[in-house]
Length: 188
Image 1: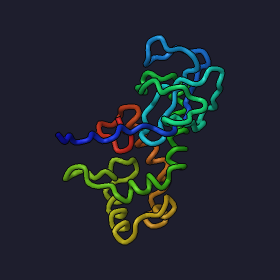
Image 2: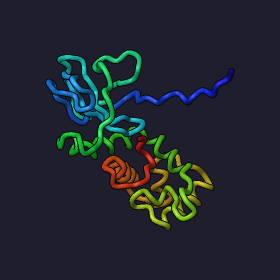
Image 3: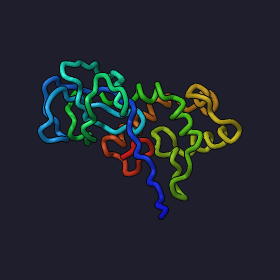
């Protein structure tokens, strides 16, 4: 009997450290104690609680490997966390770390802008990014028809849309903090 395969579950490979406590208790897994790291996944942009290797230290903003094979500083990913439940220092680091992710993963976000589609007959995904109204959206759609955007600079040159990193980061922050009903970038 043939059964359809469910799609493989997607796991984060890398995350960025927002905060860590060298002797802490997990808030997602009862009874887990040790080096507790709050991090944000690079790909899915979800906030994660991670158990670090005993006596390891982490830098705020550090990119750590949390994938399945060959972890060095991480014992396990304990679970997802809500923005409201992370420390105030993790909350205050979040915006800087998100901007770094949007900067480092430029090609991923430019590809998103190149392929974004209408979400409903009245709302285009691009319009949900702060700073992009009907005018910029129309220009972006016209320009990407001629030629896909190569990078943020290309987008700024051809459309005049200033500081795309800041605007995309702002959108991601709205999604993480629960300010937006629809998510473009953060995977639940």
